[in-house]
Length: 179
Image 1 (cartoon, one colour):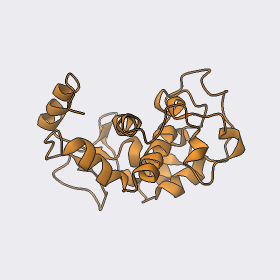
Image 2 (cartoon, rainbow, N blue to C red):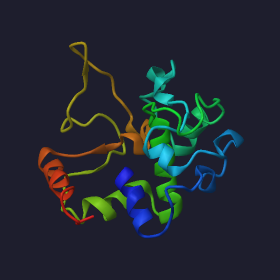
Image 3 (cartoon, helix red, strand yellow):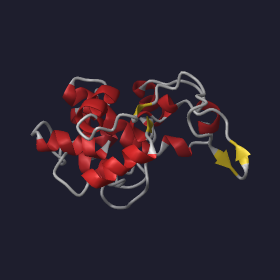
């Protein structure tokens, strides 16, 4: 997601200093000072919806980006943007929404065409979570299998899958100008 945003910056389609409200239609007044760079750097002050007490009950259910946004949009900022670091999946959901708005494509299509295809990452993509897939790794917590996670509840904050070989291609590309 971060590389996708930086590709759009390199193409002159957005700036790291743009306010997030330029790209989010239902942007609350409190977010007027939140910049793209704050989302990238986890310093926006926006609440992380995956930390909410009800996330365990919602993680198996499909969700659209707008439904995810509705979960945290009205929560006050925890701190002024740029003041502190606090890992935030909500910020990366917003960045995915920015990618879609600016590129005019779905997040999945944008990442496939702009990142995976140029790097020949043939076994990577966006997990549309149609149900548990026996080919995918099973998550564990405290020695117990975890339940089904519908990755639409993560969207651009963790909805991708890959293989070791594709991740090797990704790693090697980071030391080049391929992207």
